[in-house]
Length: 226
Image (cartoon, rainbow, N blue to C red):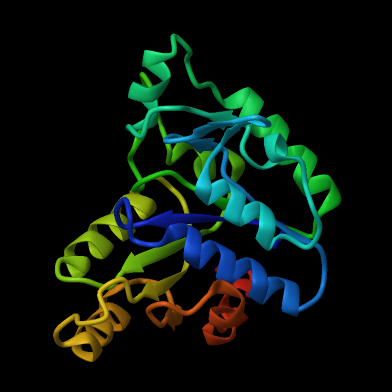
């Protein structure tokens, strides 16, 4: 597995937290690992240029320092869907620059953890969805399920869309974004029974990624596709 795509059931469900935990878990198995956020909106202007909080977290989680632009080649200012944020700046997101940045990281790393933006079908540009990244790059998908009321519907719809787009759902990670969620274990049991991929782990609320990595079992990611 030279790369994996981390998708989410929605915006704000902890994709970055889970992606960073995944990076730390892969690093613990040996090899050079880095994160990548091809497109990020809601970036802040800094003396060094635009910076996105999620991309910075991925940058810090990697095996060794990488230039920010290598991790996040498209950094948009407004905290909007990428196609809207890009339109405000008069730019159009296209795949070739994203793929070039990905290929450069893949050459120097054993695994690249690519984090999506928002949910599976977020628009990047007219006629271009975020799902095109794992589709065109042939990446297995890890789905982060934000554990809160409504997660069953979001998770099952996302899994169906991933399959319909011809991508392989390699596993899913539960992320406890609502520490007071009712019937947590019952919901997890339902997800395990209904999602067509193994659970790689459940991340506790408030546990930093380096420690949360110990809650992940990546055995399924090492298996070849059927």
